Amino acid sequence: MRITITITIIALAISSSLIAGAIPLIPDLQVTALASELSGESAKRNLEGFSRLHRMRGSRDFRKAAEQVIAELTKYGFDDAHIEQFPADDKIFYGTQRSRPAWEADFAELWELDNSGNPATRMASWDAAPITLAEDSASADVTTDLIDVGSGSSESDYAGKDVKGKIVLAASQANAVQRIAVAKFGAAGIVSYAANQRTAWWKQDETLVRWGHLDTFSGTPTFAFMISLGDARALQALLAKGERIRLHAVVKAGQHPGSYDVATATIPGSDPQLRGEEIVYSCHLDHPRPGANDNASGCATILEVARTLHKLIDEKRIPPPRRTIRFVWPPEVEGTMALLNGKPELAARIKAAIHLDMVGGGPETKTIFHVTRGPASLPSFAYDLAAAIGAFADNQSSQYAMTGSAQWPLVAPEGGRDALRAAFVPLTLGSDHEVYSSSSWGIPAIYLNDWPDRFIHTNADTPSKIDPTKLKRAGFIAAASGLALANATADDAPAIVSMIEEAALHRAAEARAQARDLPAAEASNRLRF
Ligand SMILES: [Zn+2]
Picture: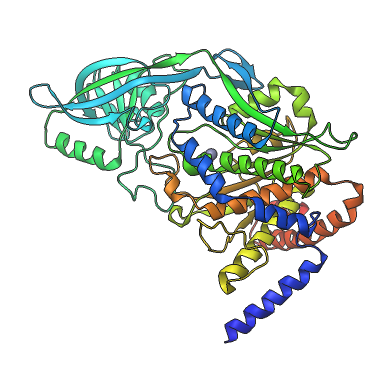
């Protein structure tokens, strides 16, 4: 009973605070329009399309994903949807980024042979699971022995082992093994069981196969197959007993001059003074199949934001934005570097970016959803705005989860009903937002992202783990933030100042608490922000 009373008081407090408007800078009618139009199911359908494709930079499947984006945008009524191309050939630089040539595979299989030399067990197949072939693998056709080299990333792993012309079995990522096994000791190829990124669930699941990378610019090109920890342990057990393992590897793959393809479209600004300024929705469209959360989720969600804003403007439920709103779907980091360096006139127009990278993880992924600030060296009200809208989604979803009713529960019919429970955190790195907010560009970037995700960069990052409700909520925070940024004028200054003051008090309290445990010099630095 006491719980019920507490919940009622919280609910009253929340609803009374809504009288001034549920979120900063957006009228409640527009909040309702966004909340009712954004569909987690529509986003997930597009996500499922992306997840069928092995989206390596410059590849046919990446191009198909970009074309899926354009086809959807065209259906939604965007008449300027198109793909920008930036040449990538390992010679052209975009800023400090050397362009990587396209990489493509046509065929790859790894077979274990029986004692008579006949194919017995297929250990990897590009056609069935392209993640089993490491990116930047080169063509080969070899039949040879498998040698266990442990970690395989330091020379001592090779002491007393002759790996010349052999295939090495290694725990390290393929590029680290390549530098020693292939470049120094003449191995013919690599089988890697590198584990996925380190979290509490690291190495717990022996069936995961991780995305593998060779060195794009290596002078000793080779091939690498990726297998699971479980399969590797079975092979190691046989080798430890002194058994000989013969493998046949066939790879038809290689690099060629290509391009970074960046799908893009805009909603033109309506204000003659402000339409030359742009608010950009960003994601990254590349990554291995299935790559559902990383990052079909961010790409499908900004696509759903595009559909929603276009439709609501057409229906006159929201006015056209004063500033231009742009959507981009590049390959991660290098595509954004190519876009901003290749089109400096476009970069100069961008006033803020909203970057979505992993925004759909359901309960199985064990993830926490983050609304992440930009660097303290690049202050902007955009971060407080996103946090205020995120807190609104948090409050509404908690209220709904606890009581079964809320004005804006932001729940997708096919999705979960859990509270969002977002974390509001300072800058973290690791995706395209850091390109925007680097000192080269100085563009404030809001970053919406899941972490951890125990299936990241593995064959198990599948659409089945994606929650449409989460996509809808990420889409709402992104859509409302972008709309507010695209429309803000000097008239909004009082509301913006009030929002900053409220957030600044929270930040001051956090800074003081953190400073307590720091050495004096660092504590005074921390308190400066
Ligand atoms: Zn990502």
